[in-house]
Image (cartoon, rainbow, N blue to C red):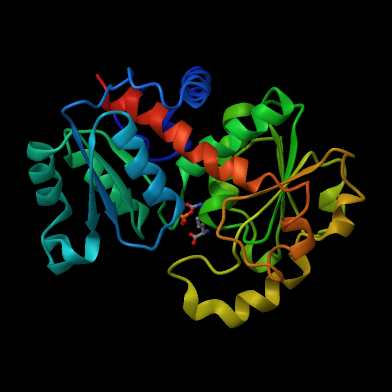
Length: 300
Ligand code: CP
Ligand code: NVA
């Protein structure tokens, strides 16, 4: 694997299979006290945005791998007062063995990774959320046995969000069929899709549901976009994931959501709370895949 995980473009299909294999093993053997690849190591967790799942799963993950998790509120670091990202990267590289970072601009994470001699993992930027997608793909593999062109997933909502972008990269990596149901105002990034034939943008939310194995949605107002709330509520309203959409889908279709969810906005409460919903398996898998990735990148 490469030094860093900034987007899914940093991993190959072969890396993905290794992550699946190690994640499944760590999940089965959770509580086994013998696997401590981060013993004697510290991992800095820099957060500039709120988090429940990511922060907790990384803190617990580092600790279960035998390492010391160091939570760092970005606003309390000197980088928040004008110290450069490069200087921060050089200093952190002298103290700790890996960085996990959640922030706004993706370019900041790229710069941090370029300047740091230690591995950097992207824990969400405005543009990408690779750790979430690794957990999502593991969840699909658990339910469907594979993640390839036999899987059809429809994402509903903000076609330009970090989740939509990350799903595009996941579809490119695995060949999975991806339908992005989004309005023209927030249509998916054409450049990112490139010439991939397995990724389509569908404006009609009902049409997008045809033959779907997995429905996926995310908040309509991502962190950092709060001032656009009124406009977003308006344009995404027709893209709520409802139980009626499941009638167009495959009989066993399931519901995925990176969480946090807003019932009555991007997802109807009856879908979120139904047996179709596998969102807590998905959330749990964050822990297992991140442990796998950290042991592969930082455990040497
Ligand atoms: N899905 C996810 O990243 O959740 P948090 O924002 O709670 O970390
Ligand atoms: N798109 C959401 C994902 C949260 C996990 C956000 O960036 O706020």
